[in-house]
Amino acid sequence: ASCGRAPSYPVATLVMQYFRRPAIVNELLTSLKTLSLPMEIIVNDDSRSEVAAFSTHSKGPAHYDWYLAMLNDVHEIRGYNRLALMASAELIVMVQDDDSSPRGDGWLRQALILFNAYPSLGMLGGYRGRIDNGRQQIKEQKQNNGEKYGAHPERDTAGRTKHLRLKDMRAGVPLMWMYKVNLAPLLIPRSLFAEVGGFNLNFSCAGQPGIGLDFELSIRLWKLGRRVGLYDPKFKHGIGNSKSSGTHSGAARRSRNANEKRNNMMLYTMYPGFHHKAGAATCMQLNKQGIKEKLLSSGNWYSKGKRSGRKTS
Image (cartoon, rainbow, N blue to C red; front, side, top):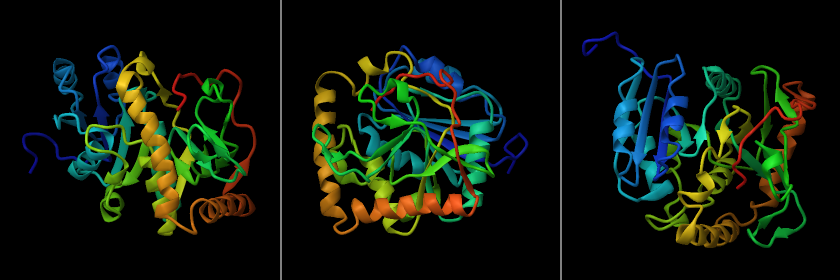
């Protein structure tokens, strides 16, 4: 049924878990409205705030379908799990409430090319990722100190993050196979997300930060024979006052830090004999294979000062 307008089917569904960021909500939502492709946007206003702003933005453009949920302080794991299953499109794009997307369709079209080019691609990260090929553990995080790649190395106060060093020749975008990727953006087929059970609910109680939910799903997909990649969609991360709002302040921050340590250690119990050495070795081998097969090309794809942003986690 056309329901009074030309029928369309969304190319992708953008899902956002939102919690009380009034200073940046308009910039955030405006950035998502520059795609010319048919889109669906589903937002969980987990703090039940800024309803007027969401209502204003939901009135356009015409090729977007907007839905606002109010699940009431369930936080990331349960929020994203529920929003993903509400999606109409097969490709789900999980975005966070302190990131803004670049103008136009380029970043999404590149992702679609990558999913079509690599049938085993299970999940695609667009922020940062890790290859657990180090020899030590980062004490404050309880995780391996291996290579770390992705957005805004200049904003990483620990100095661990590097720019992606490989580029996919078909999509024309920096890409590396990555053992673990961070939200967000995070792109995954809806059918696969449902098939594997979504994010693991054991990584937080309802209403608490679910740190490591993205890492665990990455490892699970590798264990199931899928690939996990990291590309550069050129999102702006950590916009506005993100580091003094949401879960980055007060009691929520303390809960976040405690969950991070516990969850990183729990990965070894969940995936014995695979995490971290066997899984990371598979990832590194595929990067080498991509270069050998001339699907990936190595080089310096970034010029100084080209990227900007603030997020450092």
